[in-house]
Length: 424
Ligand code: AMP
Ligand code: GLY
Image 1 (cartoon, rainbow, N blue to C red):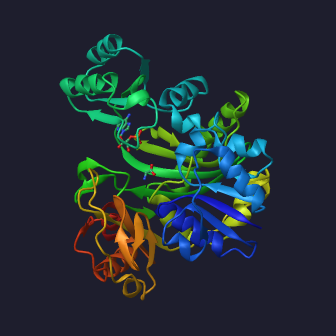
Image 2: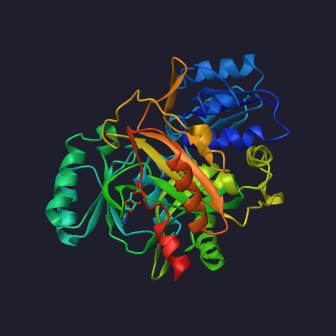
């Protein structure tokens, strides 16, 4: 079959790597892709925001499946528009992608279908939001309702911080995404990322991971899209997975079907494992980045077969096999990230780094006069597997040492929590 993959990050490189390994694949295109993806797929320049341009390309190239990596096109309704042209798409409809596109929508769904999550209020003006925050007290969490590239959440430990965050939202710091605000109870516990492959009716557990959101060693500093991840998440025992399916995922699938927005694609639940069990922090309507990279390292089955089954509503008949090994990825970022990253510095040594079995996924790279250069904030995902998280960590950092890129930086402690558990 002919496949078009949309996106350009490390997540999409990992998806491309697995899709390319499928015997079902005939022709493979990616847009816009990156130099790593270009090893497997023909890169095409399409204006992805113009869905009719994507549809025309699919018709011309006889594309049998479009795989959408990032959330923005999904929230904008690309899956609906392509389906209207008769094109098969892996990814949720616009109505179903509201699980990521509107935090208030998800909170209301949780309330209606009894899904455990933090207590909350929804507000569209400063005065009433402020009154709620003052009544509830700190610590408290303030969230812009819409997509804000991971920057719309403030965990406020004090009341003045909470009020400042409300003011920023209503002052337009997040544009339209902050016109409405969700204020949430502060939850404590260990976080985990839980993935399900969904076909509108059936949700098939699709791996667990933990990521490191803060930019600095020891989980300090600014929030990022993720500086590294590992899989599986030790906190997601079989019992915790069963509870999550029963208490969170299955009611969500039923609820979405009931409101006429059945979810198909990847449902990514950000969980807080609290003393009273798993609670939903948020949903995403796509794979995590860099979580996808570690999941793909461990997936034993043909990804294309699974994506097709999701599109065709056939997941009830499928199972998924994972390697028993752990996988870990270290994000190498360009100086300046998560602020404005420096672009254009030359990166060398990738072949050396991959010699001992590590996989390097490109996240923000470009070719310039035959040289590989940095072209984004998160630039490379250096990924390895091992019998334990500790072994995977050792292999990944050995590979990082081979990369010659003085303008890059990375965290030195990815996986620390799991490695400490293994030592105990
Ligand atoms: P989100 O973008 O919703 O995943 O939030 C980003 C991060 O903020 C999460 O990974 C948590 O660390 C933290 N967070 C979000 N909501 C809460 C909450 N209700 N209680 C405690 N921490 C939270
Ligand atoms: N790594 C977190 C995310 O993809 O949202």
